[in-house]
Image (cartoon, rainbow over all chains, first blue to last red; front, side, top):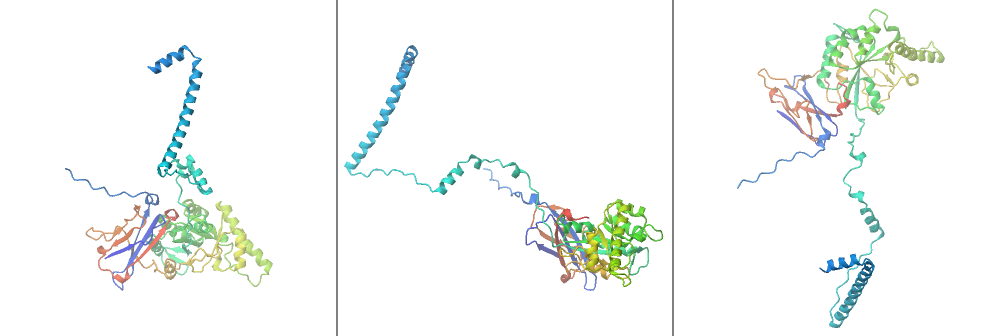
Length: 59
Length: 396
């Protein structure tokens, strides 16, 4: 199983914590996995690297 | 040749220079007059021949606004590519106060290595509770951060926990402090004057100072006598007020004198207080006062009535309530997986994006948790909680 979430808005803070809870069976207790990542806000505002331009075939 | 002849004449007869200059001016005037005459003659000829004269270009009359705009455009500074010094300096990201934070204050009392009752926590259970908080990644912050937040000087994470311990039992030093020190959790100890450094099961000044030296432990007052601050019938109003003042002030002075720190937080004995008690404490220098009302602290909570969840050793109800934020279930009974957990054959249990503890530049990332390594999961049980914090606001 894959849990996926597309952030609807841009994150304005520099850190984001995620907690996913789930059960392996209805009668078992909750389990969770939590992690966090940081957002380099300064770098986020810089121009992003562009894909390389196509190279013209050699004649 | 003509030029060289002229130069020879000018060198030989310098007085002829002025004459030459006059001749030059006269020639120019004659040419201009001639041009005007030619122009007039051409116009007369065109009229005679029935040809329309070429239209003359008239400069448009500018409005006052256009004149002003032209004057502004003429300013060379307008096109100066170099930015002024103030703008060139990198600007700090503006401080944005987070008023949506929720703080849960836990209130403990005594600790033992085994057993447990309402006011006494088993050391093993305490470690489990602290580990559950650590695993849940809910930050634990010092009580003073709540004050700083409310004064607009610091941000708090969206959800966070404050740990407090009342009375000054030696069990705090023996059983709770090693766990808190290991996990790096700050905590506040509320002491009452009659039960500090008096032997028995009270903490000593040395133990208190040792905990404070780590920077994790702060101290607040819990009164002088630990009596309820509510009025007793045998006291007159004046006697009650004098007694109340002494409970607040003497305990504060006592702790400040021995520990050489400002004591600005107070815990009401038995959680008993009313508005008169609250105001008296505030007037005597207490900036925060904590109760035993099991309520979370928000931006609107008065600083004289900060709710606390008293954690009991004989049931987990209050711990579960305290660590459940915004109705998303408690952490006390959940099992937290490590992000780097693996199956017996070494395969990762979970695959997480963005990767844990990395720094990304995408402000609108796709968050993904591949849970296939775990095996069967009840689809309806899956929920995802996202918190956005300022990294600097986190204490741990």
